[in-house]
Length: 431
Ligand SMILES: CC(C)=CCC/C(C)=C/CC/C(C)=C/COP(=O)(O)OP(=O)(O)O
Ligand SMILES: [Zn+2]
Figure 1: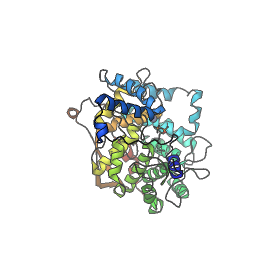
Figure 2 (figure 1 turned 90 degrees about the horizontal axis):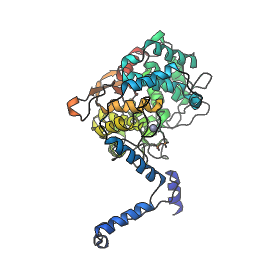
Figure 3 (figure 1 turned 45 degrees about the vertical axis):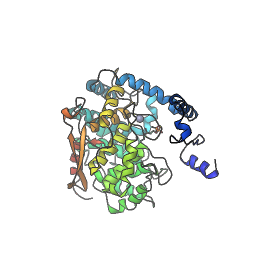
Figure 4 (figure 1 turned 30 degrees about the horizontal axis):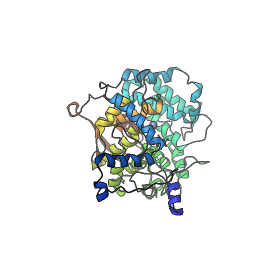
């Protein structure tokens, strides 16, 4: 490999040498091979390019196919509700210490999963406990850190605002949010290139920061031109040659999580049409794994239930913007119901063989709700500068499975649309 090829390979995060071989099926020599031999030569090439992930995928495919062939499964709602209720009744075991800096996230994932499953399941008592805990983390009403005594973080603040939006202003918790302090802090996180750092003191800067900042600011009605200045250019530069988005401009590999952040940010800015939407659509469609039926997060990686939201949600936003649906939602639905449900004890999972966790439970449920809905945008119906996304449940008779009757999710914000609209309306007045 030349020096340039070498550095490109490094840039793309490839640890193996790039092997290129052109197999020209039009060549006479190839055509004259008996069928068995030409297949054999493909097999040899496949052997040469074999990676750990390719071998892992074979195993994943086998376990998925086994589950996909079984009797179709409905969503085990009660079992998933019990898994989530457990979080409100038991102290977490010591191995969850790694999530000590993600407390607002845990509250968002658990409360949101409950609300997606059924509106009533996040009782007033649970709402009170979520709101009190968040206000203990930040008694000033934001910005929020990952736990008591931790420095404010943009992702913690995003998760805290999303969690509070589910709490119906219990004990006046929405009035305790310090919009001014959050807005001024967001302005300080803003960088000259249009990106946002995750925290003032040590934060990294990528599309997650942009999305969290725009999501929080738009929900609190403080999305000013000053905050948005240069953000579009930053995002445009994060779209890669593959069509998806990397974490930072011009450097990273396209990835489902960062693509979601970039596309949701473009939706908030109402500027999705400023990027190469066709390439994005192609990339999103390519995330669907043929045999497993679910979605992966980047080229040559494994299917994972959480991309049902990161990619499924991106596809829903593209659909809402009028470009049509670019993934096979029937297939995704099958992957979720057959391969992502933990039948013993409830909760949803990444892929067969994995244990449930609150992160996957939330994002798989969001993906399921999205797979049962159709999206369009009502550009003339705007609340505090947020365009209304119209969500319709699919008709039972147009589907090859019964509907799970989950709450409708706003794909830009990742919370039920009803809660989003109630919250946003509460912040009708400017700062
Ligand atoms: C709002 C907010 C902060 C959103 C974050 C979005 C985001 C970046 C999600 C990525 C989550 C994820 C499964 C990463 C794993 O990467 P991996 O390399 O371990 O997994 P892979 O093999 O599937 O690529
Ligand atoms: Zn995952």
